[in-house]
Length: 151
Image 1 (cartoon, helix red, strand yellow):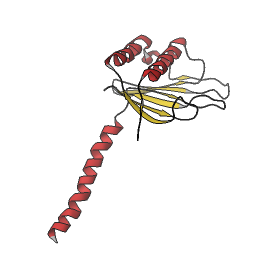
Image 2 (cartoon, rainbow, N blue to C red):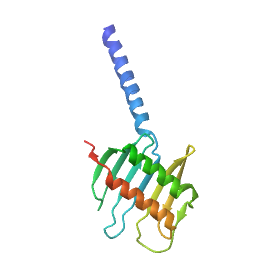
Image 3 (cartoon, one colour):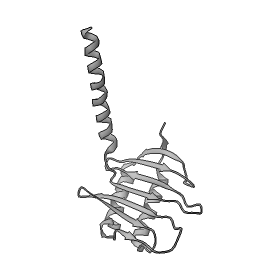
Image 4 (tube, helix red, strand yellow):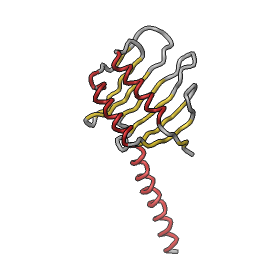
């Protein structure tokens, strides 16, 4: 009877601890994330997250090049390219919002972690050329990666 009671106490404790460790690993914030929203037309809707350890996660929705959830690892060269893009385009220099009254445009969100703070840049319309180029470069990098589908 003592062994059964011990088992009943230990099993939930073990499951709680192992789930907690798993949760911490998965909840780590991405370094750079780009999300594109849908429109009334065929605008691709997806989110790609790049982590400081070289991981990348892609979630594709409607009209995206791939749908579902995927993962990849950036090569050293690709990771250096990503760091160079941050240096070149300086996401900290952009305003938080680029908006307009024009209807039905897709929105691009750039989430960028710098100095322990998360910054979100919203590009709906009228963004400067530098931000548009940064978004294009992030998309090109996304397309170059070898994605594997989560099971």
